[in-house]
Image (cartoon, rainbow, N blue to C red; front, top):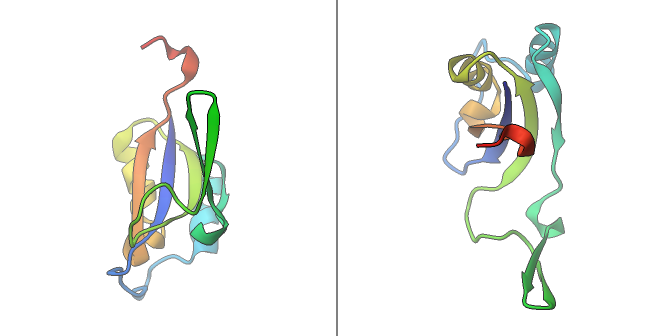
Length: 113
């Protein structure tokens, strides 16, 4: 099953601890296991544009869709047999300590449920 990892900043996050993986080490490990599908960083929220459609009007707003101290800074799509395995991969991500990682199953449009 595919899982989306939303890599988020967190002002209350911690610095790396001895033995924590760097992002390069984490990526190499997940890729070597065949679990990494794709992912990348995102530009800062100042580069975001929020799009809404109300009736026939398209409304654009500069910035993110929500006012929050945390920001989505990147994403990774991984393949894992179950949620426990996906959580283990996410827990080893450097941003699990410095920020937070939201793990969400991908819900294919053709899944029918």
